[in-house]
Image (tube, rainbow, N blue to C red; front, side):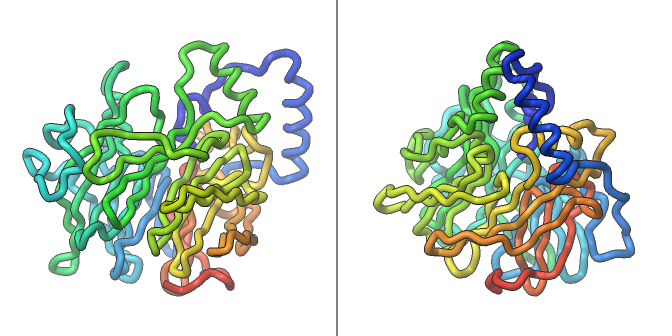
Length: 379
């Protein structure tokens, strides 16, 4: 979720909303407050020293997973879950131009790897026989006020016991899109979550916060099909702060998280039919499960303001109450894991692997590791 300037430093609410804001703050004290947690213990089973480990994805068929962090020196880190060995991804690595076999389309503005790289949401998927990694490049969009952002596409392989990456292509992300997460389908389609149109004035920031408080849609999912020449909107996916996005393992369903809608949308990729699944947490990232369902994770405090105490860099690592929800293939949702945030950073992503559950956090300094909850299918 977090990482966005609007959420970090929005202007105050209108006078008519002050009472509501005060009420929300008082409710927050009852539901559980956000606050700094103890530093990560290198001797424990958590994986320490990861700056804002926002998103996590396992390389299929291996114990390696990739973590997107806020570090400029190590924006992408591969970790062996068994041996706990780490490899900092050499980004960008390099083909000079997109190759016809892997290029999404002849995309203007993507002549090669970008000079700047900052990792946002990520996903790994086998696409037409090739292991592909998609990562939102936040640094590309921040390079200049009018810069075009990008989604970077890499080929991933495990050779000689270590992960390797090769840059393949990129998808330009023009205004007004503000992307939070990305997902790959087996046919090469790339999906992304457009959270909101970035405000240009304090009054627009205030209006956006009001929309979030009310659960009014501010964004939607977008897609770039293989062979297409640009992004297009996925109909029926409008939610308040579009956040996590994922494609089911069987490629049939697109899942879209609406953080301030407290809901996950399940979109049939063939018919376009949309099911809305209400959940208690305000969902952040989504993870596809082996049975065709999904895991959603999000904070269970006050919507919109619930993680505000964590936004100051001095507050990190910061914990807040959160819950992990399993959404089964039939659209039924139930909480499978909860934590009050007192001993670990509040989670932004939950990924099962073997007997364990790996929890990344935009407000943390680690990937937390807990036992895989009952009811979460084994890979």
